[in-house]
Image 1 (tube, rainbow, N blue to C red):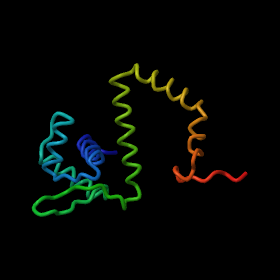
Image 2: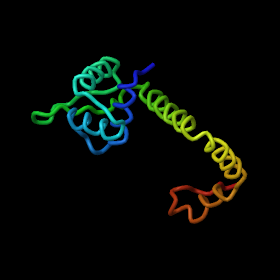
Image 3: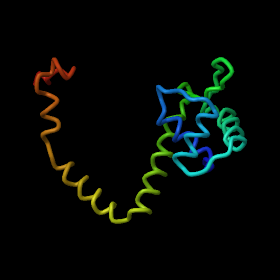
Length: 132
């Protein structure tokens, strides 16, 4: 189980993939997104995540850059946990959205054209048609 601070850190770093930010930048981004963040708390939580092998911290000049540790086999599970928590938070805040999303899911699952689209011009989609 991850703490609230760890949740904020992983969520923010995962949204910034390809745009690495320093620990100070991470703290600023968390404060902007979630309303509060204190550098010592972020730093200590980062060390805990590093000990859990969820992130790695690289030095770039004088800055320390926290990055997701994609060599950790369990990282996808952690990211799924983050997304599920975000979904729960969203549905608690907007309970009427659950009905809308459920209906949308049912309607989309009934459509078969999505599979057909992938077979149109397979040389462009990278897929080959089934020979049978």
